[in-house]
Image 1 (cartoon, rainbow, N blue to C red):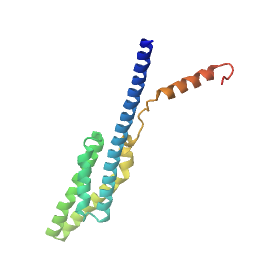
Image 2 (image 1 turned 180 degrees about the vertical axis):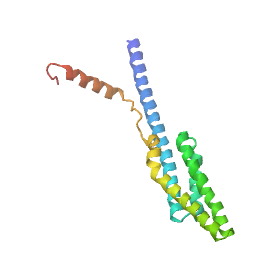
Image 3 (image 1 turned 45 degrees about the vertical axis):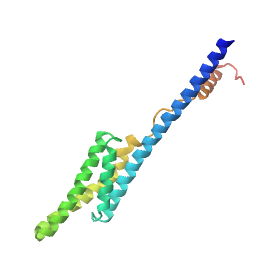
Image 4 (image 1 turned 60 degrees about the vertical axis):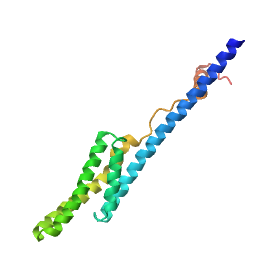
Length: 167
């Protein structure tokens, strides 16, 4: 009798441990998604502010830089390199703005064309964000089934093979 009680208790402990692991795993997946979504929103907001104010808002650059630093460990090298290109372009805006005030009219027109190219790059980046980030924003991890769900599935499978439906 003691052997059965020990076996049943250890089985229940196993089920509880499995359910705790499953819950912890799902929490990690959701936390990672939340952090990635935060970076995505921060980037989008920074780019929108940059485009709306035509580069005059220093807070937009700081938002994009902060998102860039967070993205290093949350996304792959493909996304990280694209964000890096965006940061470089946005930082060059400041240098160009200073050069516009220092040069004569012919150079100023050229600098304004470069600024327009940077704005265009930022807008294109913002438009391509959903496709670029899609791979990392999907929550397609396989959900580990509970023992009760597994047993229910097995029972449904067993019933589907029966000659006569049993209830």
